[in-house]
Length: 110
Length: 113
Image: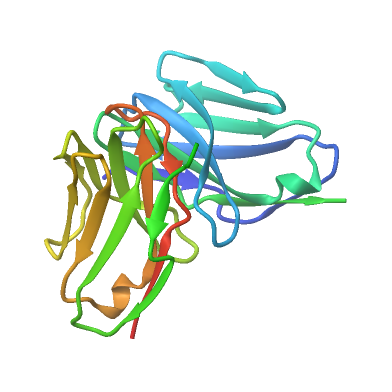
């Protein structure tokens, strides 16, 4: 069955450092890979989408890489700030299907 | 420009009852999908609707059903509620079908006693 793995342990980093989150998947060839931010008790917020034929995508302090051979995506937040503290969800999508990971909780320490 | 709106925000039901959750998509969006999220887990895909037709379905029992209206709003129905149905139910809209980025509402928190 299709599976997404994100580091279930919380990631704590110091303010100003780069946070790197990992998303690994198996048994699926998604058309898109997406990253979302979710704050407690709120709905997820879309951050970035990368297509299967793209290697890297950037938006302001965010960068996503997508390696379809390794079946892995890395999500980077540069110059992290305490306001970046949240749970980050990885999602794979095809035409009529979405699969979300369990998320990685990031805490940026001031 | 209103985003995705869901109602009710919170509700409490007892086992065996039925519940209807409502969703209005973001302006200009014609695709709506529903997700169940239990504490500590990622959202689980339930349905996707486009042009009033079910286009995708996750691994949920037939007690779960949905529909989409001509104005693209949607309802999720859950019958014969079980304790395990307690969760945050999220609605998301997107522009067109095809796995694109999702815009989520704030969810309906369902508690089944």
